[in-house]
Length: 123
Image (tube, rainbow, N blue to C red; front, side, top):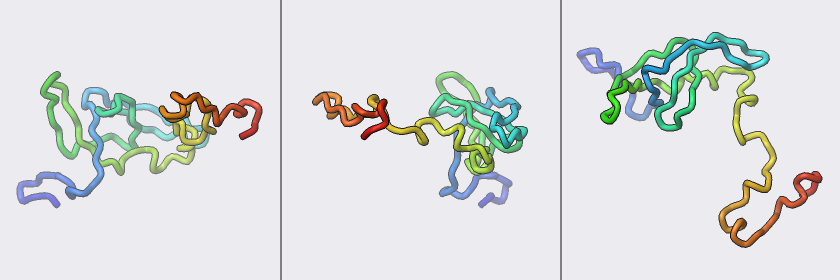
């Protein structure tokens, strides 16, 4: 809830995302059925570009102590993934079948190959 001085700080339980304020740029969604005009900004935590519907408006702006770069605090509800009809195309590692490199550390140590027939279509 905003305070009397107009602070746009959201509900403390709201989901937020931190992006580098100096990386905001316009783009077009590459989804085959979407092609929406979107905005990208680099996520501070992951370092990956994150798409947003509409021009991102910072709820709050902080400064990175090490670099002096602006960090924009955005409402996570602005993310384009919530509205894109082609969102499944962009999910990395979520839609593919597990392969030999997906073994746990214990399986790698023991040499277990539970996916050894993966290339032949068997399990």
